[in-house]
Image (cartoon, rainbow, N blue to C red; front, side, top):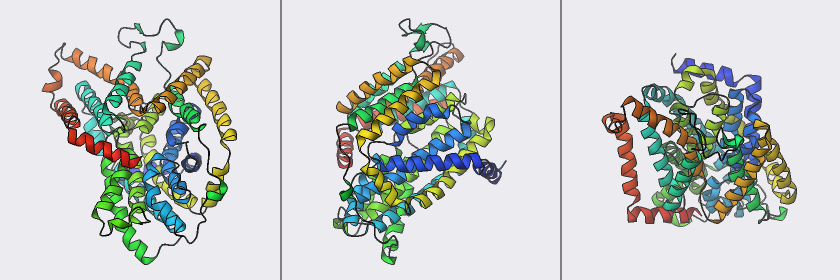
Length: 501
């Protein structure tokens, strides 16, 4: 089958009434949680993971994907109107987007964000479709040494691009790898670190950990905050940019799309790093850098295009190689595993309707988001007036029901509560939990491929050096560590993340 045949299969799957409905639900929820501060896609997807167990795999992934890239759209709305980014990737949009709103150009800023997001999402979908087949063909030739080395590279990459202290990021990866050891050894059948607890024989519950660390922890943290009052909401004027606005924003959209497409594929890259990089690039190359921070339209167009392109492109390593590039992709991989589908190149051959249906649904979802965002701005902003005392108890109840429904075990609710407290401690200590979750997902797969490689080589560790691709991946990992040790890079990295904050 060529690319056109694949896309025809994808659209025939995505355009079914059921999948269209779940794409719409995902985009609607994504936009809503992008608008609401404190409820990002990670927390929402962690809460909805149990519900996807009852759905068809294709429908479940289409809905989760819609939540992810829908949040990138929704997060810009409150960033522009009330200076309150609903999603972390929209932090940069606040700098110029809200200044445009203060000058009576809120509608133009919202249109710029929507157009940039749509264009970047469309390009991202095309890039996935173009690169999926060749990457999967290469990945099918991978053996245990190559997979192990690639996962090592992925974890090192997540450390490099994680915000905060490098030592803390390393510690979180190691913690995730250790948590992945809990359960029954697949080769020997020996129970490890279960403390004679039957509920831990199959390992820690990924859904409970994710929901606790991200969902419940965010709820606890947001109880310390108060939402904006209705009077703080900026009124939206005209939505149509002028010819001069189009002249300035179009090149920024193209550059932002290129930056997001380049960085989104790397582990830990994601929308946040891409939007920050795009903003820094636009400010650096601008003929009028003094306008940035005072309502420069490029400061909205570039970052919004970059974060949406990165959100789409981050699906490539998860779908083609089975390696999640960020925590959201780790959740997508977890959802696939819940349906007994192993992420990686086999998905394209064993589940082509799921693979190409998901890709086609991304473009359909971007069209839905373009239609949803601008006409419904007033409705989204009204959600900001919901008191937290009403919103969060309902979310906690939903979390408990969702966790329990996976295995019908009360123990899982206790797990989620425990990890909620741990996640809150992570927030207070500025420990980023994403590397831990990536370590938890990749750890068991790394161990399995490591042991298989040693079985093939009869205990010879040289197999990781004698295999060309494995040697290249490990060499890149070592190079990243060397670069990471550079004082100059550490200073630039810390400066970049301070600007993001």
